[in-house]
Length: 321
Image (tube, rainbow, N blue to C red; front, side):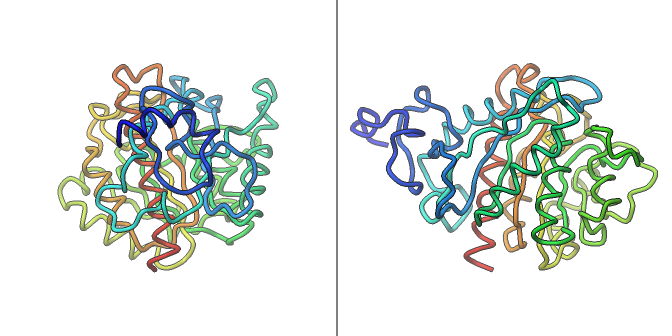
């Protein structure tokens, strides 16, 4: 970043020319789109759309993730100056990436929310772009997976979380972040044989055939073991990556609704995401960042880094596989 760049670049979310390249405006000012990408609803020629879903009406404990997309966007203002560390490719230079803004929905009509979100993602996919979604609580992944399964068929899922989200719940009208994956498996959106959960450290009686690499296994056997196993499970088929920020230990990410001790450290998550390069990732999300409990901003920073890694995985799948 040069002095001249800082003098001339501001509000590049609205003023930048084109959808590629780095941005050098001051991190502490300007419009905070994700990675300073262009805010637009025009998906012409777009490879990847970043979109926010500020929804937290499905939580079992602390609310606040409705503010997650805004906080993650703000935290990302530290990142758009350089190529992503540890990757040999530069998705900001080599892909057309936009910030598609947030989902519009009536907060007082919660029952209408799932279909609104599925339609939102469906619109992006029909335009030929993929999505990285900023949540929002973890329920949002279920309506997103509906749109993806329409296009790709049953998906493999890599699910980073402290919780399995497989609580039994056969009432499709219930909107609950703890039953997201249960519904996705039961309705055929997700292939459990090609799905794996990483970082689990709460009790579940029936994993419905989904593979589990719990937090202790990650700690004791290492990231390389974890990634090799996950890659073997998902294979070459279309794969969706969903990252609940409470996969991280509360010492690294306190700003979340249902924190559980014993989680992954940020370096483990960073290494795992980078080493997953080569999977056929078709989309992903980062969820459960709750700014009201994020006293230092560390959780939003972690969320922004996860989202950038998801962008890198998506780009890698289209250029290096």
